[in-house]
Image 1 (cartoon, one colour):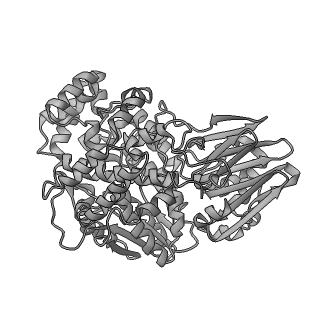
Image 2 (cartoon, rainbow, N blue to C red):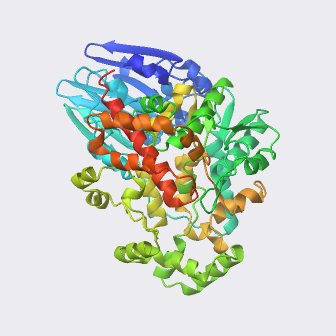
Image 3 (cartoon, helix red, strand yellow):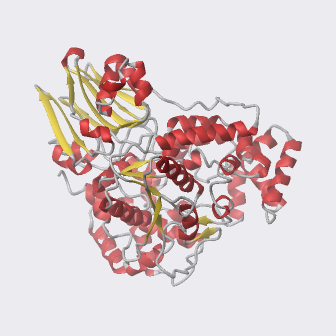
Length: 623
């Protein structure tokens, strides 16, 4: 297990064993305090052995609560602080921790073990149980070192992945291997396993200030704290910098805070090949470099680095990426440029890479569900005022479009489906998924989606707060964060800060759509910080815009990969290999701006081949 986990933590590896129990940890040092880490932590007096993976963002608050002196805290790694918390609060410890973490606490005399993950599931944790053994590990691959446990695929999770359904429950992609779900604890006691949720966002909590400016000021304070606590690093800090509002906001806050410390910030922007002028879908732009440059130029301590990947294809290193993730990469196109950024960052000694992946659920929420809320509650005058504001900000927006925004979430589902089909915009599963129809029928895709409360028609919602909570609860990116550690880099997302998210969820939707301006709260906050090209962009950036050129260069590889899947024993049970073959045979010479073409090739074909790579990886047997 230690050998398999060492690539994820190659700075230090240590193990502890006593009788029939044992623990180990592999460490990637990303904070100054990590130099003090000496896990596993054994405390005989409190009957505890603790291993901790991650970062604590409330060290000072914890020290005060645990009566730890400032001088003592300065000599403590985050894992030491976690042990003190476990002594004091036992299984209630996760409620008091802020940050990205996975934690295990073994109490030998009580023969009791509990595991926990942070509320957003930033750090992964998996477990396996049989009659004579219980094991847990950061990644599933370490569990496959156990004799008798094989990489048998969990068909239900593979089905849901192919259908873009969210992960629900503790099941992983492997049979008999289970996740500790985000915001949950798992307890092993008296040979029984039980699970408990310790954190839940409140869909009913709403805050009300006396003025609009107070919301802006509060968001600034929350964002400043969220970014500041993620700058604690053992080397240079870097950031993803696209032309979107989330990454540019994170970059701006980080640059300002690091400038106060006279430290630089490296900002990475993925761009297509030079002179790329290929078609992109309506409402998108291909090159995010120019707008990102305008942001970087506003801060003297930012070094702007453009990353081009036109010499690679989505199939390059796909097997290696799958092995790192222990799952199929969701977006093989984006995996190319994210890997290139990590590779460059590692060469520069960067250990911390900031991102803004959860921004849509927090700081840049658009507030559009406010419109159907006004319709449902009969607040017609307010609706009219919002409509006028929208028309002022977006003169080309038609009244018909605004009515649709306001009423589509309130339509009965069958009527919405009929309307989308009439408009030719219905998302048919076969248009974007490579799932085998027999496999879909056997697992009853519609019923599974219905049981999970997931809408396969993607009808807009009027439940802004609850919808965001559902998305946060059902998104698990732990393996992606762990895989970045293989390159020596740790992802940190300020927009995923629990305190920030709780604040953003509690802000009334009217603040996000104030005066008919979507994302109004963030735009007001960043009005004098970000350029108009960012705040009032008329199009959105398209990541890996030249993906189809890269893929076309690799068509021989794609065909070889498909032939391997055809020769494989079980890949055809899960994937529609005939449909993938037809897609390759009908490779288009044009039409890449057509959403249907993009869905067929970027999603169906490439994601199908990605899943095929995972199927072959799982069938390789134990390491």
